[in-house]
Image 1: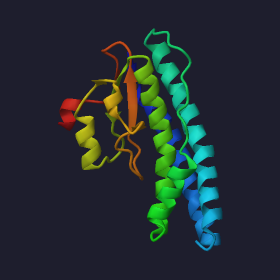
Image 2: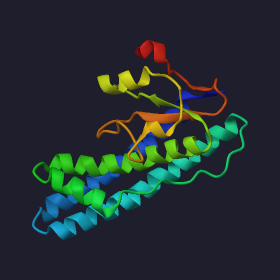
Image 3: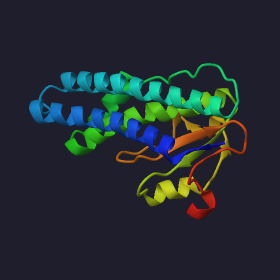
Image 4: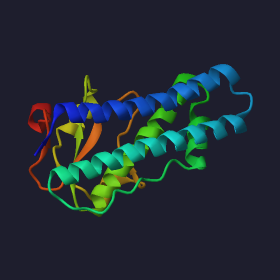
Length: 193
């Protein structure tokens, strides 16, 4: 079974739109309100990361379950990963206050991380394999990760309980497989190596 280019691009475009919306909402908030009230800024950022993180997690659950079904595998319903905690969002805000654009993108990245966490945590639960699949014009780092190919999911793949190497302005995503032979159309680890 191969996930078609159309299905894969549709999925990653929807996720990208969710992540972008989170970053854009932060950008609008900062432009309107600035940094004068840190408590309100952190509260708003946490609300955005929660709402859009939940959306990313739900979409990822749907893709996870559709992938399992297409491969003829019966798994428990996918479970959404936790959204960023207030402490994680506050740390992000405090660490990026001197760069509003970085801050806004960081909230989008936290949203993206929730989707990636959802994919990997379910893969761990169900003993699946995962791969980092690049999209569009990936950076050298994402190409390097993609060259690793399909890997058995393990706790080591989660750093501090989260998906590793999630960065802002990136539409690359994790894919899973259950049968050891399925693939995403166009994904060729040897080409990336």
